[in-house]
Image 1 (cartoon, rainbow, N blue to C red):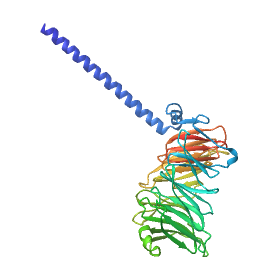
Image 2: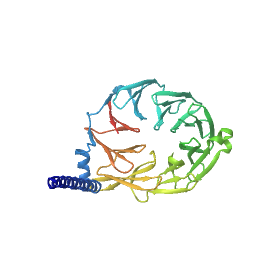
Image 3: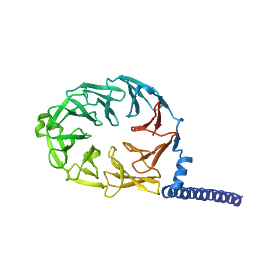
Image 4: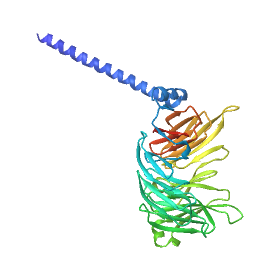
Length: 396
């Protein structure tokens, strides 16, 4: 009897051990398969495209998405900000969510708008006019009429707004407002024209990119103002001035994380760090750069055109992490018509297709249209493909 129970117990133990071995082998096979598929996905572009389309379902097509209808005769202006699509027409600013549902309608008395936005706010102003509106979430935070003609507006994530004003007795005037619409200070420039402004994420600094054409050569400068010191005495608030070389033409600046100021020139990209040191992170050299952008969370991007045949060319997107200088590359077998960037997303307009990639160089989504795409608006988690009579909404 004892031998019987002993044999039964040993048999059970053997069965359990056998099950464990089988499960372990299955797990090992699955892990090997997963690693193999991952390597194929990374290394083989054709396989990656097939997986993206058929397994990960990254490809989406026209007419299968939420839609916002537009009146063709209204000359509507379309924006993406925060998690919304906004449509400005006939002094009405309609705000829609990712499903195409209208969330709010605001009265915005602007006919020729210029704008700037980030993850929380949208600033809209009348170009060469006096009106401006700060929109936070789905409502007007404040509105204002100013003296002079507005040439440019910038807003940071905390709602601080820089307004560039022209056509006064000075070459350029820049005014800074806090998130309540209260004037913090203004600076007057007699000989230089401001081409870009940026406000640090901690509200401590205002940076101006200016061009001086008063001499025999065009001079690019970047001035950084202490906002706290400027509120006391603007004349003494210029913390630092960075003078470009003779061939350096500044086109844009943007504060990114940790107080870094990214500077876009026609032939290079530099970083001014919080310790005031300057580092060049990208140079065009002999590359055929079609587009460049620093309007990203912690990166810069350039699009290089490279011939791939007699009548064909590839677009190579070179992405640099501005914090750790790591580099990523994304290649598409088409000529890029335009790029749109925001946060960690880069949208490539390829004519009748849009490829949305992240700042690690991976495809996020691909939109395929039946016609040429003329405009794209892009925000944190939403994009709008704009046609003459409608907007198709892509949830990113």
